[in-house]
Structures are given as structure tokens and as C-alpha cells.
Length: 126
Image (cartoon, one colour):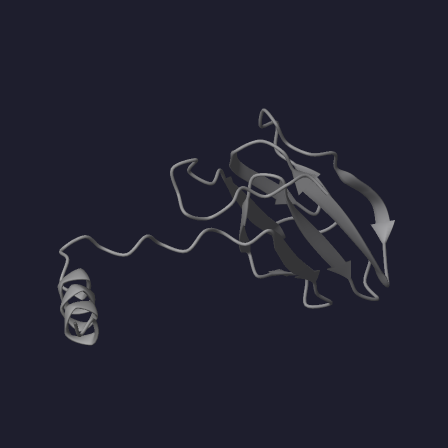
């Protein structure tokens, strides 16, 4: 008995489903650069819950102060230069932040839970 034609038929039928592919899960890490041009790049970072975002500070001093949002991580106070500091986002939500040294220098982290029914594994805490 030949199995190859049946495998080809099953593969072709499976490829013709109307269900959209699941979107990829958000990454587990993100990086934001606090630039000498007084900007956070990128301004928005998406991570999954329990994901970590690292702020890379240049030669110009910056800090990160989160808006009063439930589940936000600790602020990054001070005048940080030539260093990197990370925060883990253990709760789902949108977390706006700013550099209080430079008015108008803002950014956002969006932490999204991974759907338990998703084929993607949930991120583990670092």
C-alpha cells in the first residue's frame, strides 16, 4: 500500500483551512535606548508578561519613572549614564514612563499574557 499519496492529500487539505495563523507571541525581552537626542528608541516596546526590558543609557543622564499604573515595576531613579538597567514586567498592561530630567521624553511598555490555549509556552520568570 502506498502511503505517500495519502500524506500528500492530508497535507494539501490542512493547508487549505480558513483559520488564520495564530499571531506570534510577544518577545520575552526588549531593549530601549535613552539617546543623547533626548528620546527613547523605540518609544513602544512589547513583551510578554514576565518579560524583561533593558534601558541602555548613553553619555547623557536619563531616568525612567513609570506612571501610577497597577503592576508597574520599580522606577529607575537618578542620573544614569553609560549603563544598562533592566526591569521585569510581571503583570499584564500598558506601562507609560518618562524621563523626569527631560520633559516630553516618554515611552511605553506593553506587557501581554500568553494565551494558555496558545501553542506558545508562557515565559518563565527570570
